[in-house]
Image (cartoon, rainbow, N blue to C red; front, side):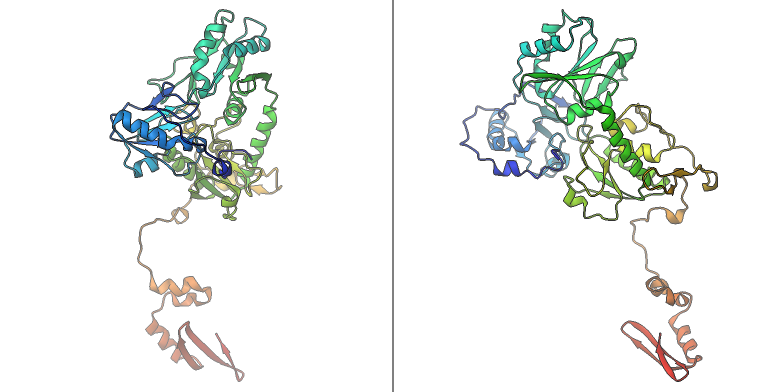
Length: 478
């Protein structure tokens, strides 16, 4: 279970740190460079800046903060809270510190944030361009091959040199570029904008006529790419080992596992919505969309903010049948095999609850694609009466289930959080059904009624009224 969410950080806590090295003003952590930066939003002139580091770079935080303060004169504030994923920007913690901008160090998904401008410092890991080009030639001997080159953000600095090495030999090769924020205007025909990458495909059949070559180690990024573009054959080159391979991950098998989770979501009656990001634009909109979808599908939902989800935390919610994780596109595919309840993505929950959405072979890990106006948005169909709904049988339990959307009456709508005056005449009726006859009578009327009944004694105690009836010489308390 090697994911960013389930890691307990033990490796970072047990790591032995050596003496800090002297650094020049504006120095960056080891393996990073301020030259490899991308602004997500307008470049600000700030008085207070928040610095966010992943766990393995926290040892350099004090050194970097001191160097940045000396170079810029701005106040640097190091964020020490545990984030949902190392790639996600913690805007909430930055706002608590009064920061006007965030500097995010390490790997990250360059995507727009809600409020604060963010400067991404990805870093520069070494890449043997000659060995990478040689591996590409071995994998694609046909010089007319249509190949899209993708890379981890830490190797994006070397893609220009690799393009010069292979561009003349492969006229149909396509190199993606890393972009931060949403480019202005709609995408032109053939242009792909996903996962913070942008590239133009001019093949007649689009991406289906192209292969994918990924520069980077195996991980969640590559898995997200392969599931999203599952019609394309993938190959990869790992710069740390210098080895290349054709990816043999059975994408169909992985999709079968995800579709099994969709079936589990159809059977669920109680759904827990896990808030896995507080900085990505549109997360509040998708939360509201999921609540409305579950309400229309006749399912109860709870919104949970638990920090990093792990099996121990989620096992506390025994009444929840399944969880849906609202996170960035890179961390949405959470391996929940060790969890007490499975965890699905917003797209998988829509497949389960929205009758208008059908499986087309395309997979979406970015929840913003599901919002109104996005490329994968599907409107909810109108409600139909239950008698007209087509019955459906669960493939897991064999029981019948509801698959149509309905308009619930006002009495079944989620309760309001506004304060309301308590009705004292109904208080006893809500505690015990046996006392329901009291709800329409006052205590004075009750006393008058008791005097007219054959009762030997009536005692009013701390727990209410104890009544003893005369029944064949025996006293029974009621």
